Image 1 (cartoon, helix red, strand yellow):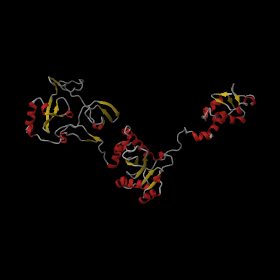
Image 2 (cartoon, helix red, strand yellow; image 1 turned 135 degrees about the horizontal axis):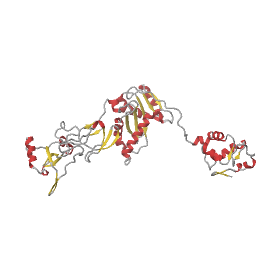
Image 3 (cartoon, rainbow, N blue to C red; image 1 turned 60 degrees about the horizontal axis):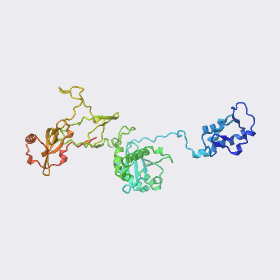
Length: 424
Protein backbone atom coordinates (compact mmCIF):
# COMPACT_ATOMS: atom_id res chain seq x y z
CA UNK A 1 0.00 0.00 0.00
CA UNK A 2 1.41 3.41 -1.00
CA UNK A 3 0.26 6.59 0.61
CA UNK A 4 1.48 9.88 -0.92
CA UNK A 5 5.29 9.69 -1.34
CA UNK A 6 5.85 7.27 1.56
CA UNK A 7 5.76 3.50 1.80
CA UNK A 8 4.11 2.11 4.90
CA UNK A 9 5.93 -0.48 6.94
CA UNK A 10 4.82 -4.09 6.69
CA UNK A 11 3.09 -4.16 10.06
CA UNK A 12 0.54 -1.62 8.85
CA UNK A 13 -0.45 -3.65 5.77
CA UNK A 14 -2.90 -6.00 7.58
CA UNK A 15 -5.03 -3.00 8.57
CA UNK A 16 -7.30 -3.37 5.57
CA UNK A 17 -8.05 -7.03 6.27
CA UNK A 18 -8.47 -6.78 10.04
CA UNK A 19 -10.49 -3.57 10.18
CA UNK A 20 -14.23 -3.69 10.62
CA UNK A 21 -16.77 -2.22 8.30
CA UNK A 22 -16.58 1.53 7.96
CA UNK A 23 -18.84 3.26 10.53
CA UNK A 24 -21.24 6.07 9.68
CA UNK A 25 -19.44 9.33 8.87
CA UNK A 26 -16.44 7.72 7.20
CA UNK A 27 -15.74 9.43 3.83
CA UNK A 28 -16.04 7.23 0.74
CA UNK A 29 -12.70 5.75 -0.28
CA UNK A 30 -11.18 6.11 3.21
CA UNK A 31 -10.26 3.20 5.46
CA UNK A 32 -11.51 3.28 9.05
CA UNK A 33 -8.73 2.67 11.62
CA UNK A 34 -9.60 0.99 14.95
CA UNK A 35 -8.51 2.67 18.16
CA UNK A 36 -5.75 0.12 18.87
CA UNK A 37 -3.94 0.87 15.59
CA UNK A 38 -4.19 4.66 15.45
CA UNK A 39 -1.04 5.56 17.41
CA UNK A 40 1.09 3.14 15.41
CA UNK A 41 -0.24 4.58 12.16
CA UNK A 42 0.43 8.18 13.21
CA UNK A 43 3.93 7.17 14.30
CA UNK A 44 4.65 5.63 10.89
CA UNK A 45 3.32 8.65 9.01
CA UNK A 46 5.23 11.15 11.15
CA UNK A 47 8.63 9.56 11.85
CA UNK A 48 9.48 7.59 8.70
CA UNK A 49 12.46 8.57 6.53
CA UNK A 50 10.09 9.46 3.72
CA UNK A 51 8.31 12.15 5.74
CA UNK A 52 10.93 13.44 8.18
CA UNK A 53 8.82 14.62 11.14
CA UNK A 54 6.44 17.05 9.39
CA UNK A 55 4.20 19.40 11.30
CA UNK A 56 0.66 18.80 12.51
CA UNK A 57 -1.15 19.85 9.34
CA UNK A 58 1.19 18.02 6.96
CA UNK A 59 1.06 14.81 8.99
CA UNK A 60 -2.73 15.05 9.08
CA UNK A 61 -2.95 15.60 5.30
CA UNK A 62 -0.86 12.45 4.69
CA UNK A 63 -3.20 10.34 6.80
CA UNK A 64 -6.42 11.81 5.43
CA UNK A 65 -5.56 10.67 1.92
CA UNK A 66 -6.41 7.02 2.82
CA UNK A 67 -7.55 6.78 6.44
CA UNK A 68 -10.20 8.14 8.78
CA UNK A 69 -11.38 7.84 12.37
CA UNK A 70 -13.29 10.11 14.75
CA UNK A 71 -11.29 12.95 16.39
CA UNK A 72 -8.47 12.30 13.94
CA UNK A 73 -7.19 15.91 14.06
CA UNK A 74 -6.98 15.96 17.87
CA UNK A 75 -5.08 12.66 17.96
CA UNK A 76 -2.53 13.82 15.36
CA UNK A 77 -2.07 17.16 17.12
CA UNK A 78 -1.50 15.47 20.48
CA UNK A 79 1.06 13.05 19.02
CA UNK A 80 3.07 15.65 17.05
CA UNK A 81 3.15 18.10 19.96
CA UNK A 82 4.59 15.37 22.19
CA UNK A 83 7.18 14.13 19.69
CA UNK A 84 10.60 14.35 21.39
CA UNK A 85 12.47 14.40 18.08
CA UNK A 86 10.58 17.50 16.94
CA UNK A 87 11.03 19.18 20.32
CA UNK A 88 14.81 18.77 20.19
CA UNK A 89 15.45 19.58 16.52
CA UNK A 90 12.89 22.18 15.43
CA UNK A 91 13.09 25.91 15.97
CA UNK A 92 9.98 27.50 17.51
CA UNK A 93 7.72 29.26 15.00
CA UNK A 94 5.79 31.32 17.51
CA UNK A 95 6.66 34.70 18.98
CA UNK A 96 9.26 34.62 21.78
CA UNK A 97 7.74 33.93 25.15
CA UNK A 98 7.89 36.60 27.80
CA UNK A 99 8.26 40.36 27.51
CA UNK A 100 11.49 42.30 27.78
CA UNK A 101 11.73 44.11 31.10
CA UNK A 102 13.25 47.59 30.74
CA UNK A 103 16.39 48.39 32.69
CA UNK A 104 16.32 51.29 35.15
CA UNK A 105 16.64 54.68 33.43
CA UNK A 106 19.92 56.41 34.44
CA UNK A 107 19.78 59.90 35.91
CA UNK A 108 23.03 61.26 34.46
CA UNK A 109 25.61 60.49 31.76
CA UNK A 110 28.04 57.62 32.34
CA UNK A 111 26.38 56.44 35.54
CA UNK A 112 25.14 53.14 34.04
CA UNK A 113 27.36 51.36 31.53
CA UNK A 114 27.08 48.39 29.21
CA UNK A 115 30.27 46.60 28.15
CA UNK A 116 31.06 43.86 25.65
CA UNK A 117 33.73 42.66 23.23
CA UNK A 118 33.94 42.31 19.45
CA UNK A 119 36.30 39.40 18.87
CA UNK A 120 37.81 37.33 16.05
CA UNK A 121 38.57 40.33 13.84
CA UNK A 122 41.35 40.32 11.21
CA UNK A 123 44.70 41.35 12.67
CA UNK A 124 45.15 45.11 12.29
CA UNK A 125 48.28 46.61 13.85
CA UNK A 126 48.43 43.60 16.17
CA UNK A 127 44.80 44.18 17.26
CA UNK A 128 42.12 41.49 16.92
CA UNK A 129 39.49 42.66 19.41
CA UNK A 130 37.44 45.75 20.32
CA UNK A 131 36.36 46.61 23.85
CA UNK A 132 33.00 48.42 23.62
CA UNK A 133 31.74 50.60 26.47
CA UNK A 134 28.29 52.22 26.10
CA UNK A 135 26.70 54.87 28.30
CA UNK A 136 23.07 53.87 28.71
CA UNK A 137 22.00 57.47 29.40
CA UNK A 138 23.46 59.37 26.43
CA UNK A 139 24.19 56.34 24.18
CA UNK A 140 27.80 57.54 23.92
CA UNK A 141 30.47 54.89 23.41
CA UNK A 142 34.19 54.26 23.82
CA UNK A 143 35.90 51.86 21.42
CA UNK A 144 39.26 50.45 22.51
CA UNK A 145 41.33 48.22 20.18
CA UNK A 146 42.95 45.25 21.92
CA UNK A 147 45.39 42.52 20.94
CA UNK A 148 42.96 39.92 22.25
CA UNK A 149 40.31 39.32 24.91
CA UNK A 150 41.70 40.79 28.15
CA UNK A 151 41.82 39.26 31.58
CA UNK A 152 39.68 40.55 34.43
CA UNK A 153 42.55 42.72 35.73
CA UNK A 154 43.27 44.14 32.27
CA UNK A 155 39.57 44.91 31.81
CA UNK A 156 39.52 46.81 35.09
CA UNK A 157 42.58 48.83 34.04
CA UNK A 158 41.02 49.66 30.68
CA UNK A 159 37.83 50.94 32.28
CA UNK A 160 39.69 53.08 34.79
CA UNK A 161 42.18 54.57 32.30
CA UNK A 162 39.72 55.23 29.46
CA UNK A 163 36.34 55.76 31.14
CA UNK A 164 36.40 56.29 34.91
CA UNK A 165 39.15 58.92 34.88
CA UNK A 166 37.15 61.06 32.44
CA UNK A 167 33.53 60.50 33.44
CA UNK A 168 33.76 59.43 37.12
CA UNK A 169 33.01 56.04 38.61
CA UNK A 170 29.61 54.66 37.50
CA UNK A 171 26.86 53.27 39.67
CA UNK A 172 26.21 50.12 37.65
CA UNK A 173 27.94 48.09 34.93
CA UNK A 174 25.96 45.67 32.78
CA UNK A 175 27.75 42.82 30.98
CA UNK A 176 27.28 39.31 29.69
CA UNK A 177 28.61 36.17 31.33
CA UNK A 178 32.08 36.27 29.81
CA UNK A 179 34.99 34.82 31.80
CA UNK A 180 36.34 38.29 32.58
CA UNK A 181 33.15 39.35 34.32
CA UNK A 182 32.51 36.34 36.53
CA UNK A 183 35.97 36.12 38.07
CA UNK A 184 36.69 36.99 41.69
CA UNK A 185 39.20 39.66 40.62
CA UNK A 186 36.50 41.53 38.70
CA UNK A 187 33.99 41.30 41.54
CA UNK A 188 36.60 42.50 44.02
CA UNK A 189 37.38 45.46 41.75
CA UNK A 190 33.73 46.52 41.61
CA UNK A 191 33.25 46.01 45.34
CA UNK A 192 36.18 48.31 46.14
CA UNK A 193 34.70 51.05 43.94
CA UNK A 194 31.13 50.56 45.15
CA UNK A 195 29.84 49.71 41.66
CA UNK A 196 26.81 47.45 41.29
CA UNK A 197 27.22 44.39 39.08
CA UNK A 198 24.48 43.37 36.63
CA UNK A 199 24.73 40.21 34.55
CA UNK A 200 22.62 39.44 31.51
CA UNK A 201 20.51 36.29 31.30
CA UNK A 202 22.32 33.24 29.99
CA UNK A 203 22.16 32.92 26.18
CA UNK A 204 19.88 35.94 25.95
CA UNK A 205 21.77 38.85 24.32
CA UNK A 206 18.60 40.97 24.19
CA UNK A 207 19.16 41.74 27.88
CA UNK A 208 22.15 43.91 26.94
CA UNK A 209 20.40 45.17 23.83
CA UNK A 210 21.87 48.69 23.80
CA UNK A 211 25.42 47.39 23.69
CA UNK A 212 24.56 44.73 21.12
CA UNK A 213 22.89 47.35 18.91
CA UNK A 214 25.90 49.62 19.19
CA UNK A 215 28.16 46.75 18.13
CA UNK A 216 25.97 46.23 15.06
CA UNK A 217 26.41 49.88 14.07
CA UNK A 218 30.17 49.75 14.65
CA UNK A 219 30.44 46.59 12.57
CA UNK A 220 28.44 48.22 9.78
CA UNK A 221 30.72 51.28 9.85
CA UNK A 222 33.92 49.23 9.69
CA UNK A 223 32.45 46.94 7.03
CA UNK A 224 31.64 49.96 4.86
CA UNK A 225 35.12 51.45 4.97
CA UNK A 226 37.28 48.33 5.34
CA UNK A 227 35.55 45.65 3.29
CA UNK A 228 38.36 45.58 0.71
CA UNK A 229 41.22 46.09 3.22
CA UNK A 230 39.99 44.31 6.31
CA UNK A 231 43.32 44.51 8.14
CA UNK A 232 43.00 48.31 8.34
CA UNK A 233 39.95 48.44 10.62
CA UNK A 234 41.92 49.77 13.61
CA UNK A 235 42.74 52.93 11.64
CA UNK A 236 39.04 53.73 11.37
CA UNK A 237 38.06 52.85 14.92
CA UNK A 238 38.55 56.39 16.25
CA UNK A 239 36.38 57.79 13.48
CA UNK A 240 33.78 55.10 14.15
CA UNK A 241 33.56 56.26 17.77
CA UNK A 242 33.37 59.91 16.68
CA UNK A 243 30.61 59.10 14.20
CA UNK A 244 28.53 57.14 16.72
CA UNK A 245 28.78 59.95 19.26
CA UNK A 246 27.75 62.52 16.62
CA UNK A 247 24.51 60.84 15.53
CA UNK A 248 21.06 61.87 16.72
CA UNK A 249 19.45 59.41 19.16
CA UNK A 250 15.64 59.13 18.99
CA UNK A 251 15.36 58.12 22.65
CA UNK A 252 17.02 61.32 23.90
CA UNK A 253 16.38 63.71 21.02
CA UNK A 254 20.06 64.69 21.14
CA UNK A 255 23.42 63.37 20.04
CA UNK A 256 25.68 61.71 22.65
CA UNK A 257 28.07 64.65 22.34
CA UNK A 258 25.26 67.07 23.17
CA UNK A 259 24.18 64.99 26.18
CA UNK A 260 27.68 64.67 27.61
CA UNK A 261 29.45 67.86 26.46
CA UNK A 262 26.51 70.23 26.11
CA UNK A 263 27.31 71.08 22.48
CA UNK A 264 27.74 69.42 19.09
CA UNK A 265 31.37 69.30 17.87
CA UNK A 266 32.20 69.83 14.18
CA UNK A 267 30.98 67.07 11.95
CA UNK A 268 33.40 67.45 9.04
CA UNK A 269 35.82 70.08 7.65
CA UNK A 270 34.48 72.72 5.32
CA UNK A 271 37.01 72.12 2.58
CA UNK A 272 35.88 74.70 0.03
CA UNK A 273 38.67 77.24 -0.50
CA UNK A 274 37.04 80.57 -1.25
CA UNK A 275 40.45 82.24 -1.73
CA UNK A 276 39.42 85.70 -0.64
CA UNK A 277 41.84 88.23 0.89
CA UNK A 278 39.67 88.79 3.98
CA UNK A 279 37.79 86.01 5.71
CA UNK A 280 35.48 88.36 7.61
CA UNK A 281 34.22 89.85 4.38
CA UNK A 282 33.79 86.54 2.59
CA UNK A 283 30.22 85.54 1.62
CA UNK A 284 28.07 83.71 4.15
CA UNK A 285 26.67 81.39 1.49
CA UNK A 286 27.97 80.05 -1.79
CA UNK A 287 26.05 78.71 -4.74
CA UNK A 288 23.38 78.29 -5.97
CA UNK A 289 23.48 74.51 -6.39
CA UNK A 290 20.73 72.25 -7.78
CA UNK A 291 19.01 69.84 -5.39
CA UNK A 292 19.46 66.23 -6.50
CA UNK A 293 17.11 64.64 -3.99
CA UNK A 294 15.61 64.98 -0.52
CA UNK A 295 17.08 62.37 1.83
CA UNK A 296 14.58 63.01 4.64
CA UNK A 297 12.46 65.97 5.81
CA UNK A 298 15.55 67.90 7.01
CA UNK A 299 18.39 66.67 4.75
CA UNK A 300 19.10 67.39 1.07
CA UNK A 301 21.69 66.19 -1.42
CA UNK A 302 23.09 68.93 -3.68
CA UNK A 303 24.90 68.82 -7.00
CA UNK A 304 28.31 70.29 -6.18
CA UNK A 305 31.09 71.14 -8.66
CA UNK A 306 33.76 68.43 -9.10
CA UNK A 307 36.39 70.50 -7.27
CA UNK A 308 34.45 70.53 -3.99
CA UNK A 309 35.95 68.01 -1.60
CA UNK A 310 33.00 67.79 0.81
CA UNK A 311 30.05 65.48 1.17
CA UNK A 312 27.08 66.72 -0.91
CA UNK A 313 24.47 66.05 1.81
CA UNK A 314 23.49 69.01 4.03
CA UNK A 315 21.07 69.72 6.86
CA UNK A 316 18.34 72.18 5.96
CA UNK A 317 19.66 74.66 8.58
CA UNK A 318 22.78 75.14 6.41
CA UNK A 319 20.78 75.93 3.27
CA UNK A 320 18.70 78.82 2.00
CA UNK A 321 16.46 78.96 -1.08
CA UNK A 322 17.70 80.70 -4.22
CA UNK A 323 15.40 83.19 -5.96
CA UNK A 324 16.00 84.40 -9.50
CA UNK A 325 16.78 88.09 -9.65
CA UNK A 326 14.46 90.16 -11.84
CA UNK A 327 16.17 92.89 -13.88
CA UNK A 328 15.39 94.65 -17.19
CA UNK A 329 17.40 91.94 -18.97
CA UNK A 330 16.02 89.02 -16.95
CA UNK A 331 12.32 88.25 -16.79
CA UNK A 332 10.78 85.72 -14.39
CA UNK A 333 10.83 82.24 -15.84
CA UNK A 334 13.94 82.77 -17.97
CA UNK A 335 15.91 80.34 -15.79
CA UNK A 336 19.21 80.77 -13.99
CA UNK A 337 22.02 82.52 -15.85
CA UNK A 338 24.64 80.19 -17.28
CA UNK A 339 28.36 80.95 -16.76
CA UNK A 340 29.77 82.90 -19.72
CA UNK A 341 31.53 80.99 -22.46
CA UNK A 342 35.29 81.48 -22.92
CA UNK A 343 36.62 83.88 -25.54
CA UNK A 344 38.14 82.27 -28.62
CA UNK A 345 41.64 83.54 -29.43
CA UNK A 346 44.15 82.56 -32.07
CA UNK A 347 46.28 80.59 -29.61
CA UNK A 348 43.49 79.17 -27.44
CA UNK A 349 40.68 80.33 -25.16
CA UNK A 350 40.50 83.02 -22.46
CA UNK A 351 38.11 83.99 -19.69
CA UNK A 352 37.14 87.51 -18.74
CA UNK A 353 38.56 88.78 -15.44
CA UNK A 354 36.25 90.74 -13.17
CA UNK A 355 38.86 91.84 -10.65
CA UNK A 356 42.28 90.99 -9.24
CA UNK A 357 41.99 90.43 -5.49
CA UNK A 358 45.50 89.69 -4.27
CA UNK A 359 49.07 88.87 -5.27
CA UNK A 360 51.79 86.52 -4.07
CA UNK A 361 55.17 85.26 -5.17
CA UNK A 362 55.95 81.58 -5.64
CA UNK A 363 59.70 81.30 -6.08
CA UNK A 364 60.52 83.51 -9.01
CA UNK A 365 56.96 83.52 -10.33
CA UNK A 366 54.41 86.22 -9.52
CA UNK A 367 50.79 85.05 -9.16
CA UNK A 368 47.50 86.95 -8.85
CA UNK A 369 44.22 85.89 -7.24
CA UNK A 370 41.61 86.39 -9.96
CA UNK A 371 37.84 86.82 -9.61
CA UNK A 372 36.32 85.60 -12.88
CA UNK A 373 33.46 87.40 -14.59
CA UNK A 374 30.21 85.44 -14.27
CA UNK A 375 31.51 82.96 -11.66
CA UNK A 376 31.07 82.80 -7.91
CA UNK A 377 33.74 83.46 -5.27
CA UNK A 378 34.36 79.75 -4.88
CA UNK A 379 35.84 79.73 -8.41
CA UNK A 380 38.53 82.34 -7.65
CA UNK A 381 41.98 80.99 -8.49
CA UNK A 382 45.65 81.92 -8.56
CA UNK A 383 46.95 82.76 -12.04
CA UNK A 384 50.52 83.35 -13.17
CA UNK A 385 51.50 86.86 -14.25
CA UNK A 386 52.18 85.78 -17.83
CA UNK A 387 48.65 84.38 -18.19
CA UNK A 388 46.95 87.75 -17.56
CA UNK A 389 46.62 89.33 -21.00
CA UNK A 390 45.32 92.79 -20.06
CA UNK A 391 48.08 94.91 -18.43
CA UNK A 392 45.49 97.48 -17.35
CA UNK A 393 44.15 95.01 -14.79
CA UNK A 394 47.60 94.72 -13.22
CA UNK A 395 48.10 98.46 -13.16
CA UNK A 396 44.70 99.02 -11.57
CA UNK A 397 45.40 96.42 -8.88
CA UNK A 398 48.84 97.75 -7.92
CA UNK A 399 47.61 101.35 -7.98
CA UNK A 400 44.67 100.53 -5.69
CA UNK A 401 46.85 98.51 -3.30
CA UNK A 402 49.73 100.98 -3.34
CA UNK A 403 52.20 98.11 -3.78
CA UNK A 404 54.69 97.74 -6.58
CA UNK A 405 54.72 94.33 -8.21
CA UNK A 406 58.42 93.93 -7.36
CA UNK A 407 57.62 94.35 -3.65
CA UNK A 408 55.23 91.41 -3.49
CA UNK A 409 56.84 88.96 -1.05
CA UNK A 410 56.33 85.35 -0.23
CA UNK A 411 53.32 84.70 1.95
CA UNK A 412 51.88 81.54 3.34
CA UNK A 413 49.41 80.08 0.90
CA UNK A 414 47.08 79.18 3.73
CA UNK A 415 46.70 82.85 4.57
CA UNK A 416 45.54 83.46 1.01
CA UNK A 417 43.19 80.50 0.92
CA UNK A 418 40.83 82.17 3.34
CA UNK A 419 37.47 80.57 3.85
CA UNK A 420 38.49 77.15 5.05
CA UNK A 421 36.50 77.01 8.24
CA UNK A 422 34.50 74.42 10.10
CA UNK A 423 30.85 73.67 9.58
CA UNK A 424 29.02 72.45 12.66
